[in-house]
Length: 379
Image 1: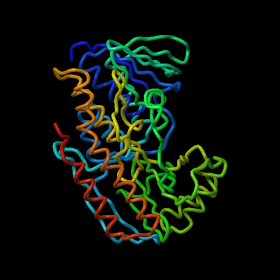
Image 2: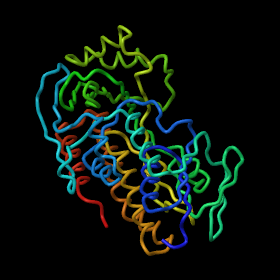
Image 3: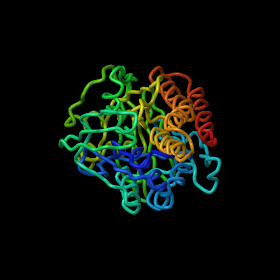
Image 4: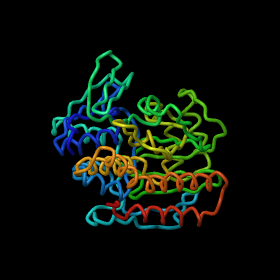
């Protein structure tokens, strides 16, 4: 694209790193600016769907992911007592038939793989800094960083998450996220089952997904009334209580928590909220990406996936012979309905869980949406 050479990306999460990789491949001069001191923060596991694996194939790190992660080809359904009641194969994404139906991986390991790719490509990474001010002309966008340094770019990409500073500066009218009345608990545990497993309790749903040859992560979705901070010192006790209705391997995990073998440092908790920006995703030379515009819940294992797809689509549009306005408009047009489908379906799945709705409807909705996501991106 003529007139665009120097690009800043605010936010070094999965979406921001993937965007930097794709743009650097196209020989753009890219600065990746991250508020934290590292691109590999501590976290639990993450499940990558078939569509997400296809996207990572495009990014160019799929071999490393398959080597480090736990392969998911089958989902097993259990009662809360630990009785196996069903199995369902996970299908590959169209255009990536050689890949598995899913992979579980430790978030830190995934971030490390992406960081190594950035370094191999020579992306300029700026840590311990973020944006304080933005000003634009028809020709450039100027930013002032937290440390007072001023920088000038042809394009600014805000990939700085749910509480995006870039979004708040450019779209102050944004109304914020909607709380879903669920909370997500995740904890890294020994790999006790070969396949991906879902346990259906009377009130709650839990699951275990392999994330390496020896580890899995256990997740459970809790029903909560208020979006409020829970003291981390209470996390172990609260998680143990939630696991009480499950038997089998999950009761083994509960015992390890009670015995202090699994501690606070292994547990991640967050309340679940969603949002989707219905209006424009860009203003002049500033554009948003990932959770800053479409935050979702983990029900479809696709939050990271749609951020990566957004990175791919945006980089494709910036490579075309068109104006910047056309590129940013087409990026949103190609990506909007897919992101909307993930968010709306995830919210519906959560509502079915909270209200103890039809298990058949829940399963059918999940399968149909994942099948839709297996379809190729629109051109």
